[in-house]
Amino acid sequence: MRLELKDIKGGVLEQEYSLSVDEFPELEVLAENGAGSYQGPLQFTLRLQRTGRMVEVDGRLQATVQLDCGRCLCRYRQEVDERFSFTFTPVLKEADAGQDDVELEADELGLVLYQDEVLELGPCLQEQAVMALPVAHVCSSDCRGLCPECGINLNEGSCDCSPRPFNNKFGALAGLMSKKP
Image (cartoon, rainbow, N blue to C red; front, side, top):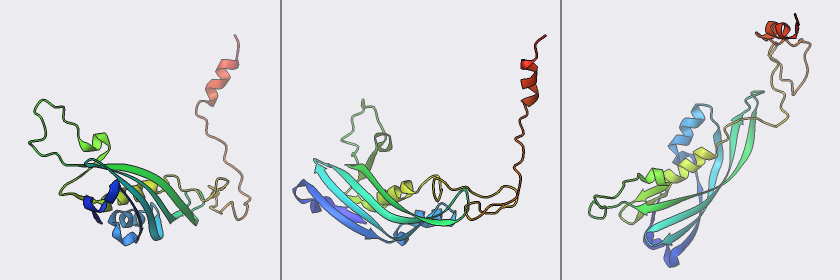
């Protein structure tokens, strides 16, 4: 997915993209490893603003992701609505960089490099889609999970298992502190 600088007429360009999951190979790898899979197209809304040779991008990602709950192991869908921003800057030529300058990497400054007046949006959008995936997969905040003894889903029913006593290895030391000589 490429965009030429000359397409940003008047310094501002607003674009909407509906992209298939197939266009982002990293998302397929994450789905195969159980990190969640996007369902349907990913909707990107981008506002690009050109300031000199730098291009600031403000965007929004809207999509649906399918996940496995970390407590009860049930599949569920969650809506993703994330805002993001990043900045493109041109690659400096050897003649542009002074010898006495402190060299900082573009990544350290939070910049994305471009060359030949062409912005490569694909890798940046893929990175935003990866970062938008939820870290903690829980179907609801009141999910009770599975019984550790019999494995029944406690959201769907109850069991007759009695909870195991907590194994407090330092419980014997507590008695020493309460005894007075």
